[in-house]
Picture (tube, helix red, strand yellow):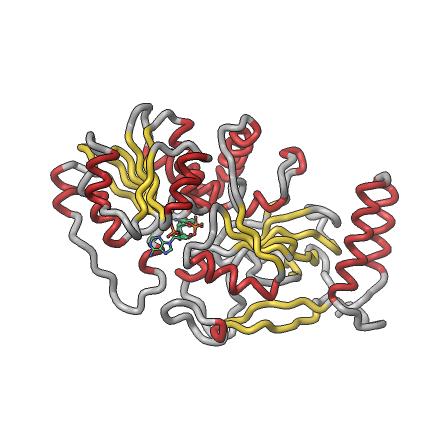
Length: 374
Ligand SMILES: NC(=O)c1ccc[n+]([C@@H]2O[C@H](COP(=O)([O-])OP(=O)(O)OC[C@H]3O[C@@H](n4cnc5c(N)ncnc54)[C@H](OP(=O)(O)O)[C@@H]3O)[C@@H](O)[C@H]2O)c1
């Protein structure tokens, strides 16, 4: 344990560190080093907070399923570092993955390294980690459950740190590889994306436009439809909560669909599959329509469409491309710089509001990437 001279409030510690970082930005490097040393040598106790599963999720998550627990952070040992979360990501997979009572709620964060005994992660650097919903964490080299390694945010890209949870993070990499590798889009083809106003879908649709495709987005509100068509360049949209999907597809894609990027599954997908062209490709990314179901999902059978149109459907996990991760990040960053890709964040403030941000996202309140700013 860091020896306890005085138990200070977490926020005081954070404030002190932020002040030292401002110093870092304003003065020269040697000043910065001394401020970090000063922070790490004052040997204060740092108490973090984390969300722990109280009841396994059943149906739509309830506030009582999680509780916030305090933990005194241990002193980092050789090879370890202590970091403080700046942004926490709320994502659909956090509902889809099986978690047990007592587990820390899974999730990723952008965090700042406060005290380091690992030369690969210097004090003051920013990282993306998969440590769960926690304000603080001591990294000990153990692999996260998602098999995505901790990575340092490259300052050279000169992008907002929060982007590394969205367009330059796991959702952006999912959109890039999941669409380009599996759908193999060709110019002038018709592409449809479900969950089109979300973190992954909004990027997929824009990449399809970069590849000169005709793009239709499926969304849960008219406001989202207006956003993706007016701001992101989608050619049309379907509001699955109000529109007749078949009628809209006949109107928007009279010549059929060549590529389908599926974020939601269920009946929406079965209907879209009936409108696919021969040799169409379907990238199965997510099934959010079923994540909160307590019963086995039922949807119209798809085999007939698959057979007669000789469709190719492939599911994937983004971790498949972990070795090529940087390629997608670099490409997305380049498109952002060129103004070909734009991104939007729905930001909730305060660690104590993380659960609300999560359920808001599951209910469709987010435009683009849903994140929590601590
Ligand atoms: N395979 C992988 O490796 C991988 C990686 C990342 C994400 N994913 C999957 O990709 C999908 C999108 O993830 P994301 O992070 O981009 O989330 P997101 O789209 O930013 O947020 C979730 C969205 O899902 C929509 N939704 C909720 N319930 C729905 C329902 N019953 N039917 C249709 N849409 C519904 C809501 O939008 P509306 O307002 O439009 O309903 C909501 O905003 C998820 O299924 C996720 O699990 C997979």
